Picture (cartoon, rainbow, N blue to C red):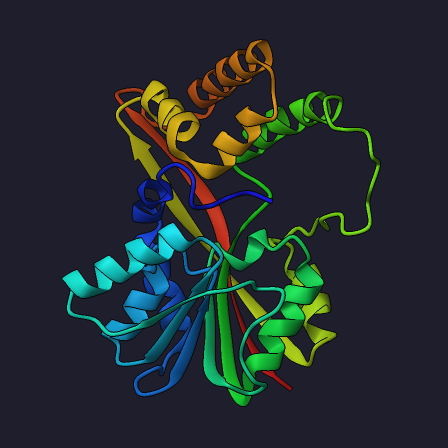
Length: 265
């Protein structure tokens, strides 16, 4: 399991702030309603919901990120409650929230079916679920393929126990048909809208360095490799960033994603 408190995820969180507003737009109205932001990270969606008058709880497994979110709330004069918790086992009664949101958080659940079941369980009968998910297309697919090619290298250095009792499941959260199937099992009807988000940096080198030095996913991947493989991974990712760069005077990539809006049926 990735420790999202490692590194400086807040760097990436700052780049996806616009998505929080769109997720909240999809969930409106929220003023005065009980709202749970799942895998809230540094609080992008939770803070936006608080600005709009919601009664907010942000839940995340990483204590450091919750501390960052709490500091941001204080600095902006916003009120929210921050709880450490697991999206697979939410510490709330059924029907506790009129709105449940997640901005690129729920999609990292290791067991999507359990996370979907829990989100549906805590949602009130007339409530709304809104979350964002990356589409499995666009400039990041090459980076993902490179990472997957090194996954076998890391597996060769495991302890060899072969235990798969609680092996993480894989779900393409950007597949709207699969999302509808998943949430229909728990009484939630889902509809989706496609959007795009641009990531910018001074150069491909700057973006590559930011990911490898600060992003929890990159830190986790590098830790599983020996030094030669880490360097090869870094070099291949940089080459791919140069290949997909949309701004030759700097760096920009446009990433497609969807916003899913769900409600009980």
